Length: 434
Image 1 (spheres, one colour):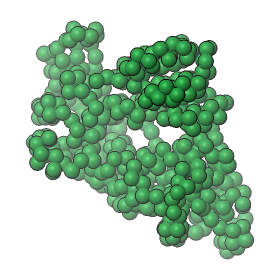
Image 2: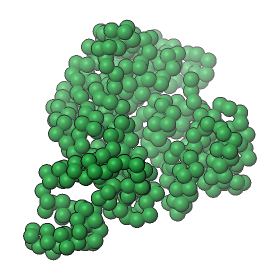
Image 3: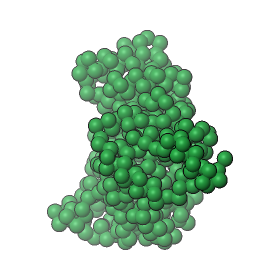
Image 4: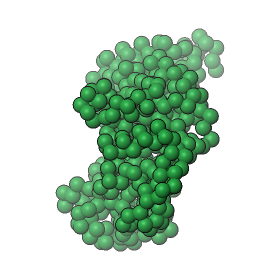
């Protein structure tokens, strides 16, 4: 079932652009220009998410959110806001908004956010920075991924939810001969079975009710590049049969057409399922599995790689600080200990969300345990783990990095490393730093 997004925006050009992006990505769309009409649309009961600007000609997005909360309507909100009104985003998040989007809004940023909230297929439209993981297990995954990238074999990436399997797929694509062609990512678990053939292979005009023009599917969009099938273990059985034929014959036909097109794509897939158990239960074809898993790569969980936690947290801090144009310089020692003590059941994705929220809510350049929402996390074990991890990194390098990231401010740099100022000065003198 397609999910409807309500766009509440009085800028007609922006509203039209957002609507085109969402329709292309497979969403149903409704629009409203002010709070009054938005309330009427929400009351109709078929809105899955509200994407609203803060400033509206009548009412505003914040009061619309407050009204929805008072009415006990379980509709998630995403607030769009300009950089000058970042305080509005803070207020919206505290009121219960699921997330916010700083303006100007970009297509990939919007689609990935909605993909996470509504679980519909999303097409990746431009390159992103890859995750920076440095633990031994993650480094081994990276090494294996780069080695297999040069081949054409189908790779299945295994690992828990939120561990960064798509980042591994991107790495394989970017180190492959297909790197200059499209990378298309599809969430297989949320494609309705009755729409699967059309979504993957496209359709011609008149093929079914509502097919008003020829439409290209995922195989067409990824032509010459890489097609990444996420959550492959949740693919419908009917779609498994169709996909197996394409992988065997290397051709496909759009729905309603007899023309055969070459399936010129490299297939990468990912799942968090135990595929052996899934096949035993009869939910996944064994012959398709062996077509997709010519080579397997395992992405470790964040809990398996504590060395990754602080570098990843800083990676996300820099990314979101730049995105929101907010100045941050690092984490307090207590915040780092809390990050290391927490179990991270949601893996890298959960860490990214915590840091993003912290960047938005922080009142000082150093993000605190409270900003991260980890006040209840016991930090003793994290402090020991933090010391153990940091001891493994060259001390001079850490001091130089802290100084650079904090604009050579001694107080901030020493606090970021959990050192007193006198100790920090002694370390600088020891390594000949000025």
